[in-house]
Image 1 (cartoon, rainbow, N blue to C red):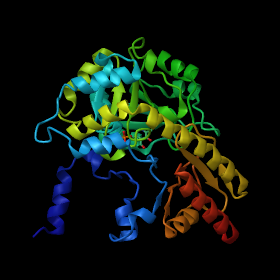
Image 2: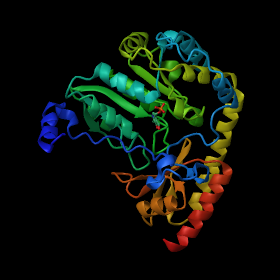
Image 3: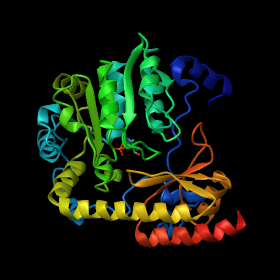
Image 4: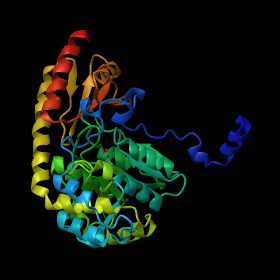
Length: 369
Ligand SMILES: Cc1ncc(COP(=O)(O)O)c(C=O)c1O
């Protein structure tokens, strides 16, 4: 039987930078909400992880029922997948690498560049997985805060660059603020000569991209995902657009079979059903605008404009209390408590009927809060 001294012993062998590693506060699985495993998933309104409330294309569900080749390893060279992604993005296949969710590419990129102690500029507040992967890979996070409207302060970024800086990470639209970075700002960051990772996980909801510039800049990397617009979060499929030399390195260091055969089928079918999926994206954008104006009517909430599929909201009456009151009513939202995000929640855009229940609940709670 393990004793406490033997577990302390094992800690001495664990990598120094991971002994106190904080991990990531992932969204709650509806299946285990409040520790219960028998909860009715259908009754939960899940607005905490920026998933697609409409699910995937029906073509994907149908094709997965007869998914071939499950007993065969996927193509490690991703030839068909990269060709499909080239057709979708307009960027040729030699620039493209796919992964098990775009999270995996964030990890691979940092693994490729970072030696212990190297610095990475992180434009906070932003996606928490950036910090997670920088620290996991032995890097040092250099935080450059955004301004009060969550815009990037380019001159502050330039001042933060040192001899140890290896990368600049920028999500656009940013999570959890919903802010798009103007192209001029991205170009100024690229002028630094440092590798710049532009994470466009929410591109389809914001409509602006720097993807066409990938062929022109040796230091631009763009990340995308099928988790949000195509409703494939559970299948884990993301991709990146890179200068060809970087794409070659990433193809070499990735786990060979990182994209599974079901994910390939799902991409193929999603891209055949693009009109349907983009119709859903339009519906989400329309609901986002309705959500914004409804939230604005409540004097104790301050929503921020968003170009993604969620809305960040400052809660004058206490965000943690609100998040818990909503959870008690089976509505899940994300709570934040960090500089520039004190007393904030992030609400993913749901289906109209889900948003209606949210509005009614917020109105009722407003009387108590
Ligand atoms: C900015 C950003 N990048 C990447 C991801 C991860 O996406 P994926 O599901 O493709 O790993 C998310 C998910 O929330 C995100 O918000």
